[in-house]
Image (cartoon, rainbow, N blue to C red; front, side, top):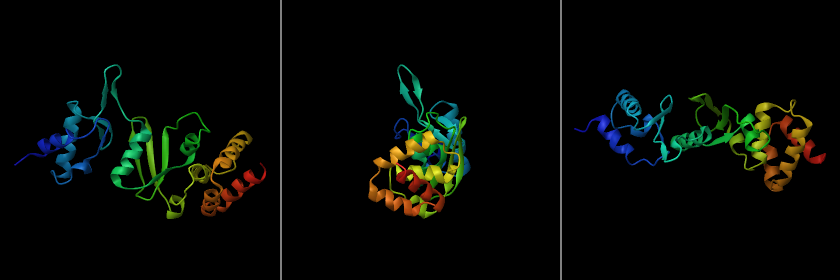
Length: 200
């Protein structure tokens, strides 16, 4: 009978470089404990790279730069895909995605229709925060991010410079989608955005 180690090692050979690896990928290949031990051993011998608790990758190799690991954002997207859940950037990370802050936050917050959890990746943290279907229903590429950023951060601390930038971004959104998204926003965020649009 093929061992858990041999079965997992054989499976990993079929993975693409840069692909995320989690213990649940190998359910049916052995007990949960055996799977975790095998992945730890494969990380120890350099076959795969450990990114965080229960999180591994088959690293890309570059002749000049050596090992290339996925970014924290790429890890979050890949993890959501594996778990078959939807995620949307929120808070300071949403502002960064909109180009309103140059600094990449060390804590990436995503709203999700799946279970809430915190994943540590090196010095960074990914937080999947469970939310309502209403917030996941936001459609606008710009308006959705703006609403989710403001819902998480509040509207009181937004300075005049950021207000102007938000106003300019809202002008680029499809008016029909913007109108639909505003219906899904909280009263405070709805009124804040409406004021931005009307004062333009």
